[in-house]
Image (cartoon, rainbow, N blue to C red; front, side):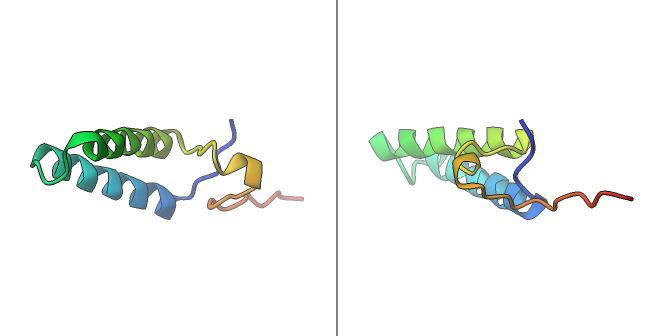
Length: 71
């Protein structure tokens, strides 16, 4: 797996995941939506730490810088 997520993308995902986790455990979001958003926050955290988003791959999306090859 090659990384396809840039630093800004990863930071945004971690912040969003943390917000969703806090909202869930504070009881602001609950029920089925709470569980679904908690699962999404786990996925956001995992993809942020790995640096690879499987949904980006089929569409060819890359938010990271492509390394410049030296001659």
